[in-house]
Length: 102
Image (cartoon, rainbow, N blue to C red; front, top):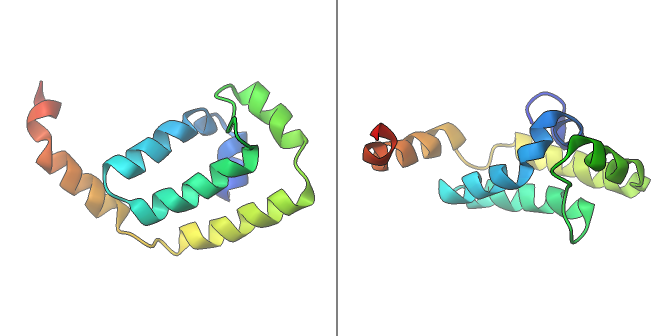
């Protein structure tokens, strides 16, 4: 995400895990950031982004110019870092370290 915004994220193979990223944000309690990501996922419609990169590219090829503007605005919101993500991840890991040690 930090290297090109949502458009680049979805274009790259990292977009294969977009739904998992949303679930991870929710898991660590990053509700504000999760809301931004949820809105970015919504540009793909009800079905969301395809988990396959090639299929996602086909979805992206059908985007109207408004989608790019929406994603640009969401990039700005995301880059404002409304939550301390590293701190939330660390807190979550510390709280669940026994499960991770197995």
